[in-house]
Length: 323
Image (tube, rainbow, N blue to C red; front, side, top):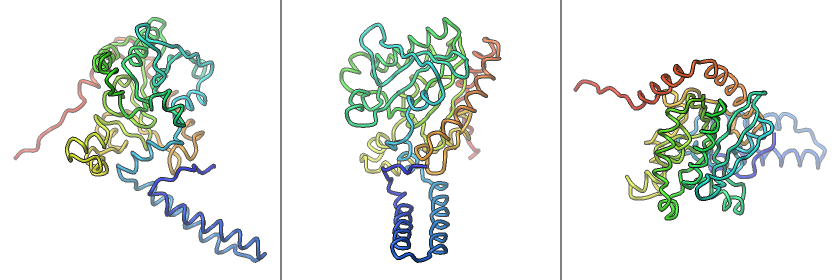
């Protein structure tokens, strides 16, 4: 398993131990002395430290993991799980938004329509992909593809990975809020099965614009929230530096989403995060997608629509304890 080069702050104790291990191995080789017991002890300590660190991540640490630059993106999962992906471009009104991609593909011989938010791996690609922040034309392209899927009876699979819709002047001038609102409305009554997977960041309306689906799956180290922790900190604490505090207050822990009934399934990640073993993460998603697609595709359409309505209708319900 290849180690990601980009280390997060909380991973440094693990890296320090790994450096000790490398140094010990080099010394043993150089001086031709046995160090089997010492090496085994450090290896055991590394494994224990990894499990302690990664299984007790704070909300802010999970946000950092969701943003890891080596984390698998939508195109990585598409390449691993689907075949014959044919990308379709443009919203037929303004432009082709590269931050939101989509097209037809086969998933285990089942034809599907894919809609996905895509980030870039480097500065150049991020500029092309607008750092994964779709403009209104991206959401209008997504809706065009979903209506095409509805016409031909294709299940829709959405990959959510965005800090939020692009908040620039041009985006506002072209009515990004309206584009997202229309998508939410139309996805609620879309007459074909749909699944949304949060693979990294699921920020605000940017995520909701392709997130109204029959099944919502979330990876263990992803987040799905009404606002980013920095945005929340800027509003409530008047200081973006309070992002860690905001992340805790927002409960940015994917497990909380399943507890509160916001997501249908929590997808386990390899120890350290999906970026440590993308193939294992893809296998987990593959099994989950097969199971949920088989279930929702077998339902009568009217039953599917009623279940979708009831799911979103009951989100946010709460009870007050007596005074």
